[in-house]
Amino acid sequence: MKAKRKKYSAALKAKVGLEAAMGVRTVGQIAREYQVHTTLVTQWRRVIRERLPELYESPAGPIHDDRDELIAQLHQKIGELTVDRDFLKKKCKQLGL
Image (cartoon, rainbow, N blue to C red; front, side, top):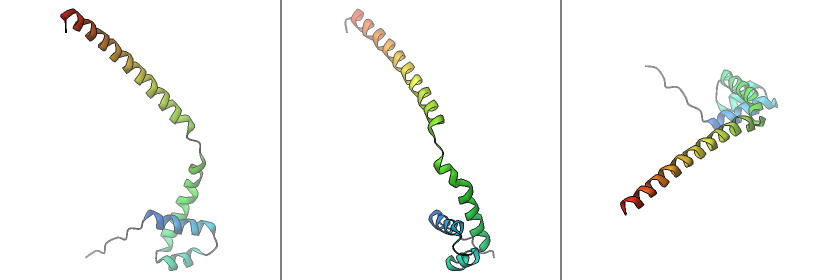
């Protein structure tokens, strides 16, 4: 029978990976303290080093484009609804409703 794989929380991965990235202690020491394999510590450290620059990237470009497109779509919808409302208002007056 196979043993179940251990699942580690994101908080633990971040803590261990950050500690390994700082380099105060060796990977082996960190692995022993947290009772994880040294390969995992190395992988988590690599992920932190690769993704850390993403925290400081400015998300201004894509968000503004999406927001401007959404605003344009909403303005178009408002125009369509206004035309529909005016048409129905006119027909209601003609029918005496």
